[in-house]
Image 1 (cartoon, rainbow, N blue to C red):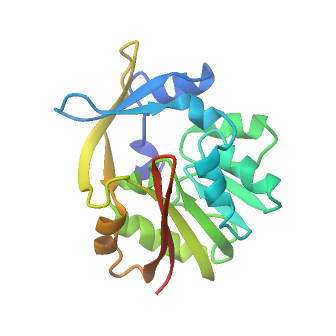
Image 2 (spheres, one colour; image 1 turned 30 degrees about the vertical axis):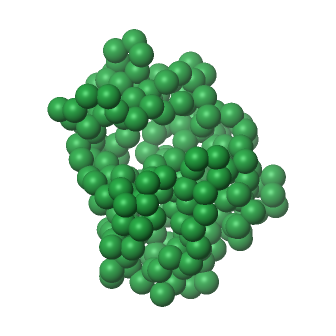
Length: 221
């Protein structure tokens, strides 16, 4: 099992993320270890159909599309409905099972593992905070650049505050007190993301925001 699979979002402990997916929703909190409060994550949004912000992403994709950290498959579904060959990958077995139960293609795999058709994906999605995978944007984006084609776009959902730039050890908890094991995570806004692009071969081609969510499209430098 890869390191990315061993310590990932909401896994381990009481596995509140998988519990929420199996039970149709709920509110989780992403919390920095040793800190109070945290960011609320509505799992119901992941299980619902694509919303206006998601549609703004789909309007910019070119197929084939790879959704990294696909969760229960809403963006894979939206991309296929828009006519694009699409595949989801996720380290959560429960998320992949839910995606497949909808008849959608998904693999239980880390982005750092070997993936099908590397070098041919024309759009790669890192939405819903998945720029945080592994706790370091630069190596994650370097890996993503290896997966996509020369003319591809990588669409990243970033923190709505452009200057946000912080990595930390996090845990996920739910309203009933279930908590996950610790995992590395990273929050980064559009302006700060520029500082993580060195050595990736990528540059920011476009930024936009819809319904309080912010996005960046990366292309080859």
